[in-house]
Image (cartoon, rainbow, N blue to C red; front, side):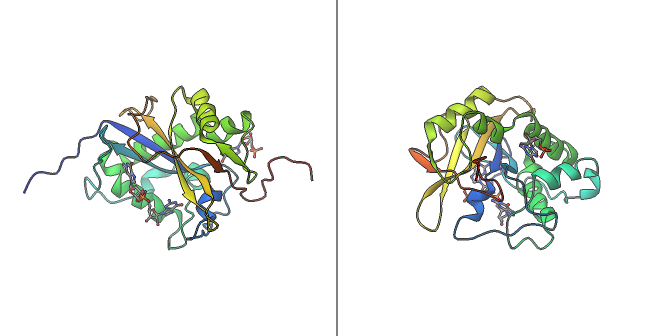
Length: 215
Ligand code: 5GP
Ligand code: 5GP
Ligand code: 5GP
């Protein structure tokens, strides 16, 4: 049996738009910590290779939230689960991300989660869209303008993933920012290794956010 290859070249820092997760066939549920605000939320920090493959589940080191005492508030605020099958809520989501991706990152659990919340707080992608006039108002925006707004903030264009609502509309779902193996420095993503989202996509309303329009 060949030895497992745990190598990787960079990290994808992945964030999800809650409105697009919820407005899909699977639907969503909110954790006991409450409905998230109208901001992108963290999905995970994923080791990846330049050819698009990636290592997963690199050790059996158990997830231990007691190691995360000083980041837990930040995790609950910005890394909440939207899945309806998370019995223990956010901790199920964090455990899954740690076990599948974190154990391949080379970081300790504290570093893995701290690097993620630092990246989240250092780069406000929801704010970058808002500054460009791109707000979650159920309207359609071009991927070109969305990508430009992100690149203005990050210095590099992230990868963008779309999903589909039950009516068949394509919508802005996840943003993949490329980060060096230090977990801090942003880098250019390798030439499209994921199925790119193109054209025009809906940016769904989420929660009480009404795009700031006066009603
Ligand atoms: P999906 O099939 O929903 O796109 O992805 C399922 C899971 O596969 C994700 O939650 C993630 O754990 C993993 N995954 C999907 N695409 C990528 C990728 O490009 N890079 C890495 N590292 N993991 C991915
Ligand atoms: P991935 O394996 O692609 O990193 O993460 C997907 C897994 O995380 C699925 O098993 C999904 O049920 C679980 N999960 C829990 N909460 C969430 C959430 O808020 N968003 C997404 N995309 N997956 C979640
Ligand atoms: P407030 O604390 O008044 O709700 O928000 C202060 C500023 O931080 C506002 O510009 C708001 O948009 C932003 N903000 C508040 N909570 C979050 C969050 O969870 N994520 C992001 N990205 N921005 C937030």
